[in-house]
Length: 182
Image 1 (cartoon, rainbow, N blue to C red):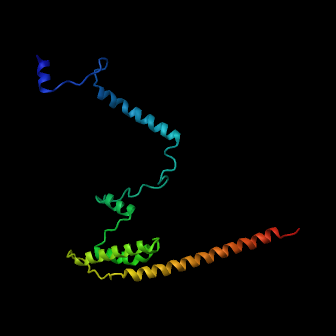
Image 2: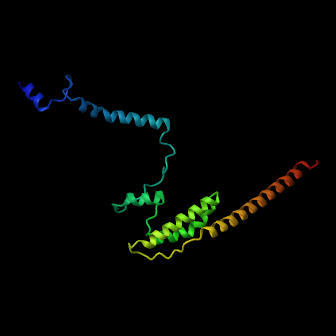
Image 3: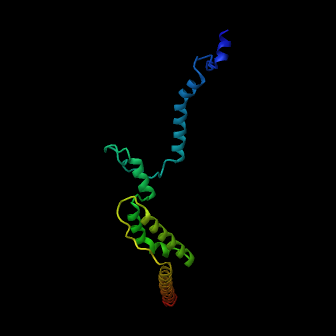
């Protein structure tokens, strides 16, 4: 009758090992530490823990006060995230815009990047969140494309001149090496 009651309530006793009287879960837990130690030993022998970053260095932040926001600070540092107000972020982006444009490969991409920058400036000017005022000027896309083209042409000329100088140095070094007489 107690079996019927157990079946009706859904309660049932976990299976036990007849020899030890332990449940299967208890037996697994007892042997888990041995299994973990064995896995660690094998990994050490394979050299999986050699050359880990931070090896031989003190653990950072050990012994200092606990900061509950440590993980978000590490995330911002590691991912190089910016948490500046929009006005300050736009000033920073404005200062870095020429470098960003120089890494682009076509006039269409430059024009698109400047249009995107201008759209962000306009959005920031319309928001009423407070914070520092948005003083970042809009950029003229056509003027930026012209400036990008001029910087690109001067880089190409400089690279060609450096390549010619290197080739000339290689030629003159080759003549001296093979032109020697003993």
